[in-house]
Length: 146
Image 1: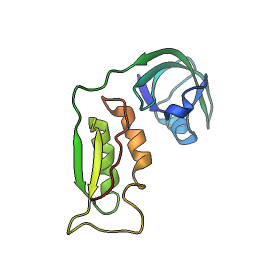
Image 2: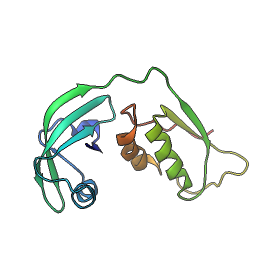
Image 3: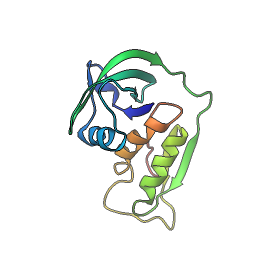
Image 4: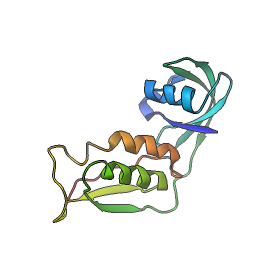
């Protein structure tokens, strides 16, 4: 069954709507059709079993069939990661979130590449998307670099 991430503040409406990029991915890559079932994770411990109501080229509407609370993992893992350059940091955040890391703390080391953007802002969307694959069903908060 396909899994999607929708932020908690957007999960109060029924039907739920996927963002345009996620809708395009669901329709074109995953070949989601009307009547298909999918799971929506909100990153706050809720799993929503949904059925596709309307699938078009740029939007997908999902009716909530069942709502489940997901128990948190019995442990918390914190990843202290030296800031990597380019898309490497995005990749690290994505994979850490998929593995269920509870918290990611970027560390500025002697060989870290410092850019104009905060390492905290860059990987937020990747973190949310990756949490759909996470066993913990929650997005890992990014700490301040230290």
